[in-house]
Length: 468
Image 1 (cartoon, rainbow, N blue to C red):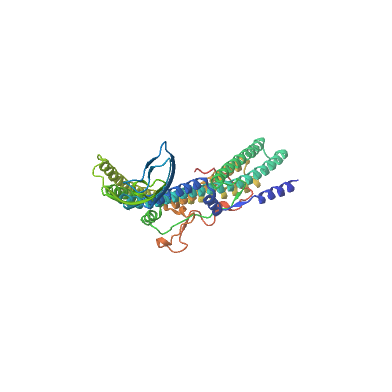
Image 2: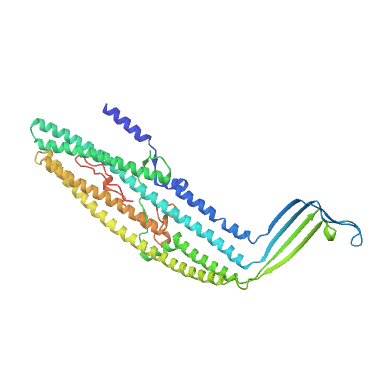
């Protein structure tokens, strides 16, 4: 019966689709609702150029009318004209066509130039939104994958405690151990069952969050994620320079500064005159004094606002203030990038050091647990000593798994600070920094002791849910 249950469970697990990190990132790029909203906003902003050019391109309009007058006005033939002249027919019909074209419109020149900068700014803001979404997806994936590994470890722990409880029950029936040892074994088994329930709920919550980001049902398993790679030989100054060059938010601050300067130029150009041409064609059933039903006219018009009550002066002062504000904003964006990159690099170094110490403690705890279990099998050590050794091993495993996850998240934060996720890639190429190929520092070691199959006497630990 147990064999059939195991086969059914294996078949159910095999049927679940496996989601890789690259697939999750690609699904986020295609299906994430926040990115779709950002894309639509970019499409709306990209129309600014067409709107700006609309003011400078020709405007053509046509119209027609039919009017029923109360009386008709006709000048009879005589000394004024040889024929009757209809000034106002009883049923008056007419149509007209008009075309307008700006010839010299300095303020529109600045508006067209500003529209291109606005589109570029919207594009950079969309890239920033994509980087933040993909970074969040990567964080959620690493956390869920770690929790999935912890769940499997917790399942092995439950099997171990059940086997030890059965062995202790047999020893108690034989009179070789006390009832305290049996109660302790039963308590460990009960605690392992409850920890397994919490681990399953935590994994379900993390999968639900990840599925919401990538718009998938959380009925998938997670493949082991790749190791985040960061530049190895690059100095903090090199990383800062790379981030300033590649970060879209820094580029957006620079474009915003150029946009404010163009807007200020537009205010200055409003002091210049404008020149335009208008062509009109009209046809009516009343010939009028000219005796012709069709008329046309071409008009060249110029306008020059000499004084508008001080409005342009106020706009110029406001535009100058916006230029100064944008200049400070650009400096602030660069300063924040410098602080973020350097802090992320320090956090990664601390996380790697903590993980190394946790790995060393885990090795010592495993050796101590093995020796205690051998002593227990030989009848030298008591069950309480075994339980204490298992507790120490559990704490060591929890500490190592937690520090390993923190190292991965610290590497992801550094990659995000460098602008990696704007291209959707988890790995950051170090070639631009002059590093040799393959010279990256991995956020996780190539061989993880925690991924080894534990000995039967060892207790795998549950990994706490990551903080996002």
